[in-house]
Structure formats: C-alpha cells, structure tokens
Length: 410
Image (cartoon, rainbow, N blue to C red; front, side):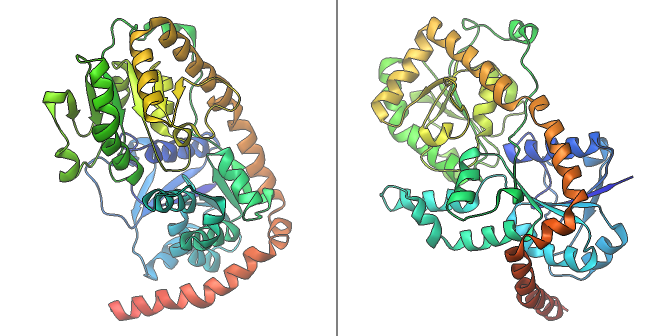
C-alpha cells in the first residue's frame, strides 16, 4: 500500500474554514487511490479539530526544529509528502529530502500568500495594487522558493496560476490547478432547498483568524449595512465565524439588526436559511469558500471583484459583483426584494458549480498527473535546476539554523 504523509500547518477544521475543507478533500482523493494516510502537525490540538481516526487517518504530533522528525519520516518512508502551505515546506522540506530522497513532494498553497499580503499592504496604504508589488514582497521570495523546491504545487485559482507563470516565470510543469471541489448539483437536491419565501435575512460567514474576513466585517458594519438598512429597515445581517476576538464581538448591535453570532454549528444550514450572502472583500487571494458555500446552498451573493476572482470563468455570477458602495448596496437590495433576480442568480450558482468545480472534472486528471509524475520524477527534477539550486542553499542555511535551535533548546 502506498503511503501519504500530510504535514499540516494546523489540524484540519473543515467546519471552521475553507482551508480545513480543502485539506479533507485532498485526503479523500488519496484515499480513493488506496493510500495509507498519516497526518502530522506541530500545532496544538484545537477544540474544533476533526477526529482523524474516524476517517482511518493516523494522527502524529511532531516538533519543530527537532531531529525526532528525521527518525519518524525515515521509518515511515512515504511515497508522497503533502506540505500544507509554504511555511511547512520551509520547516520540514529539507528533512524529507535528506531522509526520503525519492519521495514525491507536493505543496498545497491554499492561496498565494504573497498576493494576499501585497494586496493587504496596498489597501492599508490607500493605493491601487499592482502586480509589481509582488516583486518586492518579502514573503514572495520565500513562497516562490518553496514552490520551486517541490515537485508539484496545487493551486486553487487560475489567476494565481497566471501570476506564477507570467510574473515569477514558474514552469507550468511544476503547477497543477485543483480548486475546492463540489458534488454535482442535481434537480432533486435543488427541489429540497428552502424557497425564496422560506428564507430571511442577509448573512456573512468567515473565520476571523483570516484578516480579509475581519476587514470585511468592519466594512459591512461601518459603510455597507447602514445604507442597506435605510432601504430595508426590517432586514437583519447575521455575522458568523470561528475564533471571533473581543474587537469582533464589540460590533454586535441588535438595535441596527447587526448580529455577531460567533461560530456556526452548521455553516451550510445557516447559509441555506438566509436569503443573500454579503461578502464585500477588499483584499485577499485564492477562491472564496464562503462564496462556493453560498452556491452549494442555493443562496445568491453580492461580492467584489476580489471576492469573485477566478471563480466564475465566463459564466454569469451567482448574484452581483460590485466594488462601488452604492452599486453594492443597490444590488443587495435588488436580490433581497426581487424574486425573479434571486432565482436567476441561484441558477447561475448551480451552473458555476457544475461546470467549474464538480469533482468529476478534476479527480481523474489529478490521478493521471500524479502517476505521470511518478514515472518521470528523475527527469522532472533534472529539468528543475532552480529548484535543485534552492534545495542546495536551503540545506546549507535552514538546516543548520534548525540544528542550532535544536541544540540551543537542549
């Protein structure tokens, strides 16, 4: 039986974040291929982490800057190692190379961190973002180096695929487009969803450890919601999200129908009962799990260009995409009040899911790519000279820094 070792940045929480759902989907793909799976992480256990044993996955706690990992991975000898974000590859990639040189190394970016951070900096400096910002973003140097050191990097966004190839000149052979996946939407499923008349209120949902979500909620509270409330005085906006801080909870204001409700026990149910999802994201990267979830529950959404980036292709959106405040407000009110517009938007969402995110569109080509990679791995690595160069210098720097930290800790 082939073995997959996943090294996680955190333990998966599929009910708290899109990243957690994404990780469990990737694990599911490898399980279909018959892999025995071990999930290792140096993170602390969390209250809402999934019970990996229920899925037949071995859970192993590991330590940063500790040679015990070398012994662990050498004994395991996985066929594939999946790094959960570039920071994990920085910490453990060189150890995998030293102890399991023939193991295929795959990086899952979740989103392109350097793009998200560069946009965030531009936003806070009150200026337009430019792709040139990426070339001076410190995190980009680390993230691109990590991508080059790996045999394959999984990307959820076509826009980010273009950025990597055209801005950073990454060879296409090192990249694979694999978005968050969805089941096919069948007519029988649609018929069971709550109708337009059975739903009420606006909703936003998102993990508050993610800075774009916190900024989005501030924007809703201060700018968007007061204008919607003027036009729809009886409407409510419910804000859900895991790990709300005190500054988030302080925005709770029932007098203006603005409710901070913390973590949703059942996120899909919450969105499914709502009439419209609001997501005026002003910076970020990747594709947005909250907007896919809106489509999956038949709930139209109003978002921004950043929110909808790379999600719809040439298809009409599941609602409206507007960056200007007044346009965003008008679109929100229209979706809420106009049943015909609402139904059309709902159907647009189902079409996007079926044509762009359906599991069947990606599972077989991912398997083919993986098998092909195994068959040409030596040639593949010879053709990636810059990756080999970065591995060499990583072993000469990160390795000895890690060993120094380990010795110091003793």
